[in-house]
Length: 186
Image 1 (tube, rainbow, N blue to C red):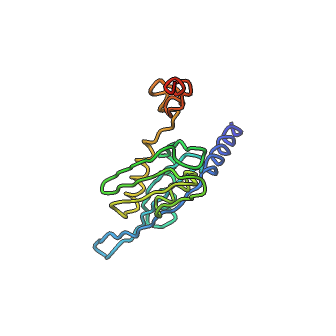
Image 2: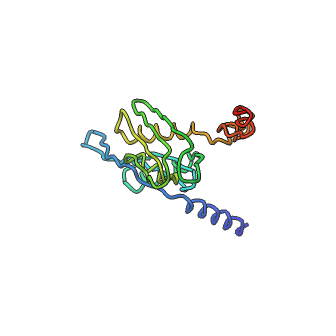
Image 3: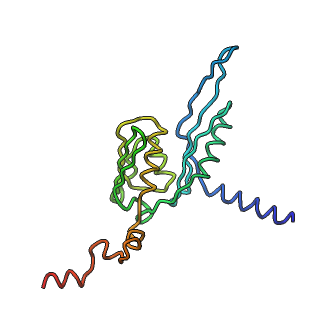
């Protein structure tokens, strides 16, 4: 029995260690009560494995470390998988929207790097994207920017997924059917 619990603990530790997290913002919030103000902290954290999984979370507490811990736990529960092209960029251009926040994310050639603003940069770094060009339009609120980015990334699809959905081959999706092109030229 003790050995099984030890195995579970080591698996959990290994699972937690494979994810890295990035603190995006901390807000100090005040609640006015009879005796004065009570201060608390709100934290926004992005978590990812740098291989295509990413999530975000928010946490509130009286102390900063506790708020960060809560946000990290929430982020690990809300992970999504994003298909990456060659493990370095997006497959296609993506538009995301949340409230007044709009984001545009474009695939980029090798060597471009991450060209994106603060909160979006954190998402791409934790996702493992190396080349992307992104622009935030509308809001500069970090929470809405991250939510818009995640909403857009959730809707992204790999060519393999699109091909299976349509009942075609990947080469047909890209229009690279050599036999068909040769027949049209003749």
